[in-house]
Image (tube, rainbow, N blue to C red; front, top):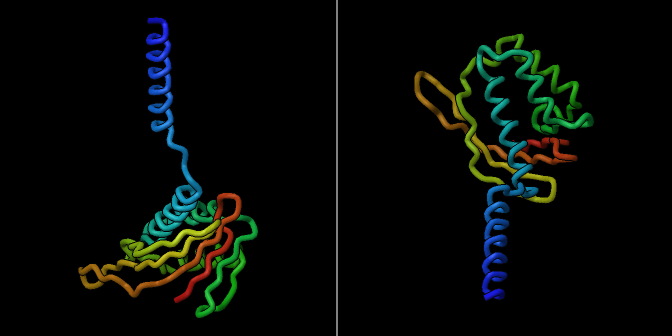
Length: 154
């Protein structure tokens, strides 16, 4: 009888521990990188709207390391964090963010150690219709949970 009681208590506690472990799911490395990536695209989409503010741009740059670089060989090469920030501000001041980009569709992601490769499309509104842009590829590299480098391949 005593043995049955001990087995019952052991099963009860192990069941509670299992339930608690499932409830407190720990995020994996992939999950944490994916969260930052999704925040990046979500915040960019907000900046692309006509009524975006400087604070919206600042929110994007909180995702970047201090030594962040943006690399886009087709459009000028390597940009330091400050150069990219000034470019965002200039586009905003010049009305370049007019709300025509209504979504960013992630087609595919490949995860690596502190890196994600993304295939995406911008969804724009043209003449009242939603239009999917060309597929574009980008590599995101991470350091200490923040975006360290973005390299565009389009």
